[in-house]
Length: 385
Image 1 (cartoon, rainbow, N blue to C red):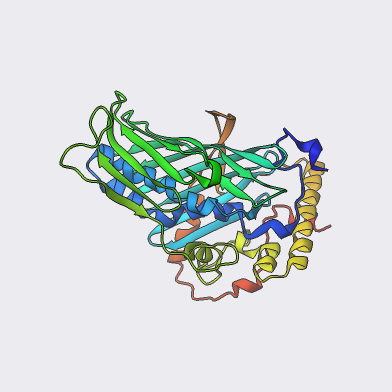
Image 2 (image 1 turned 135 degrees about the vertical axis):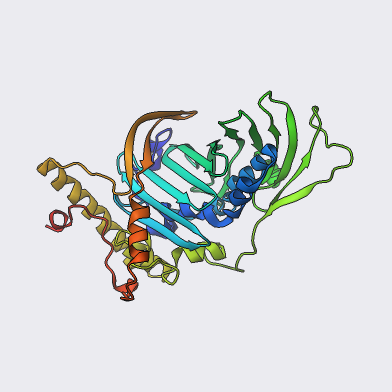
């Protein structure tokens, strides 16, 4: 059955059994990057332009610890959202803005930075493995000086999909560029060799605009990153020492889905913001059933959501309506990436207004979030017919 898909982009072509899923949507997976957002706070506060890049690059390295999980997250339903408002002073909102092609958009902000991403995953099925191309645009703006950083991550490869023990690697270069000054970080993710040799290792340099090395960086993407000032040859400077900039937080032991404490926080109703949006990923009945170990119900609910999504699309087309994202606007910008062009979606600021109105309302009305129905539908009456 799978043979006919070899060489194809299978992002939306294949219906997969819920048995291989984790109880999390891709929109929640996007939010996992925020666990170590304090690194961007440090980058904004930093006077040294090269150390800014050390902190910022370490922030983007940190999410790969979560990426090594081999469970597949649920594909978001069109109009689905995820909001995170209880991680320090950070506010995060993501939304599924397109179904075909599948495109997600996200925005995070606090007093130090804004983070914006448009993500359109592209895949290539290779038989017993699959390559995942991060066809997206990621921008961070450090507020103090208005510095804009642009990220180009490496591809990810999932091996032993059908035979053997499944494992994940991200070989290649990650480039983080300061678009304001031209300084950049180039980090090389070592490909995994025989018997696991080299797996997890990351090495590279912070360069100035003239492409002269200033700081070397080294570490493992599943453990920690360190840095040391270097000379023009890339060798450590005399009188300096290697210093650690990031280390992965301790994770729960023997967790079924290999979740971190932060991943559990992302899934938890207890940490959901007041007056949670009805389109939030936490409310997905398939995700909730899988989290509680009911695989049969999770499979049924997943199929039901997908069919309802198809029904809404048919009714939308009959009525001549067009889906409009709520928190992001499509721009005219087409962003080139190493794996193809991307339509860019921009945060429209409406979620900040929505959340501010709730926070200032002074309402003490309590809603049992667990009793809320998942509702991403813009045409819910039509979809229910």
